[in-house]
Length: 550
Ligand code: GLN
Image 1: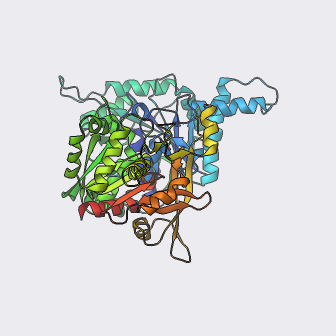
Image 2: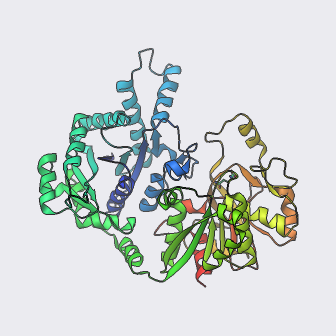
Image 3: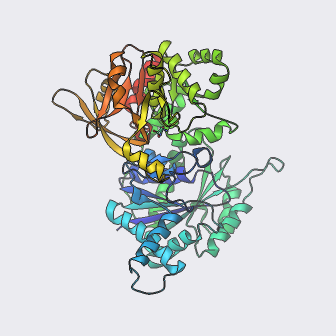
């Protein structure tokens, strides 16, 4: 039977609850336990697929095609395992199943009420994860902040679970301790209020992770201890760090692993964080920079929001740079700007490599096409992810194949050359405005042709693959798109030298394009960034950085 660790947030959002949850998971894994993590998002949306990434952050995609919160990406990266859709719920999802069950007479004709039926459904979902994963520890991160109306029913579920199985449930509050400039002192009061708020939901935290700009000093630890009714040892200092990957090590310096096991009266096994320590050491000691530019349609939003919208791409780039013992230096390049000032394209020459990540819609797209063309003709390493692959195809069609006006039908429905086009079933989705969870989502196979750059990349490292008799590789990657390279144009593109090095064998769809006589020019219809892990960087990113630094 699993142990359950609920993680809730106090004072404000955005203080690293997801990283804290993931880091606790990593600590427990390092002690030989099987750990999984659940994310609860209190919003009504059934998934994160319809949300604007600039507002909400990246939409992460799981193997089984769920579009979810970016925290799930953190779980996968820290736990180094796949997380599936059962590990995710939103208010919308929970209500949807309760209503569905009621319509199917699943409640035997009785009245169905918010309490206890909603928390019971939450518990049912959490228990299902425990049964299916057989995890020793199920981490449950409750989104939002305590005291909000929105996550009350999830806290209620946690309280009910504790009532039923007090020995198997632990509560951790990740709270924020501000250091206001005009006072110059770390304040504990907001955290005291957060604990009171949690108390009024019937929950007393067992452990408090004290997030702050600085480490917690002894007087502050004592204060939190007394006012929040918790032993001083259970107040864990969690200061800001340069890299999120330092967090598990910092937690261990405060004996968090031991404290958690002690609460569950578990003796624990030996701890092994060696690989993680090595990683952190590389992060801290890699000095030689790799200059990378991400070309996108950015606007007023600052770099902070942007880095959230592309978190998996950024992490994948970092993992690959660290693999080469280099320091990633990432810049945001605005594609709108290239449309207005084409001469500014020459700035791309200052970079070791250029990435055009996933995207939707028409704004800034011509600028991206120009950037892809500039990289192609100036031998600058280029990695196109999903939209970035489609864009490189359009540029090649227009410039090299002389297919004037070539485009994706996403942008120009009347283009004479729809080199990127929708699949028939997607046409119906668009017509019916059936946008939720209706893209090509999740893992699909890809046959990688022998002799290609992609093949060379995937052959190395421990990325999961199968070898065909003729030497081709079968790999699997995650998708999130509606449009595809149009097979009617394959021959024209190939004739001019665009290599289709990856093909989905089941539906004969182009998955990878590349230019053989280029330093590195690769585009993928899938999103390799979702499968990159700090301890197992993604092979395509590793190969891209290899070219960038050579
Ligand atoms: N807009 C493109 C499509 O839907 C690309 C999507 C993406 O980059 N994730 O096919």
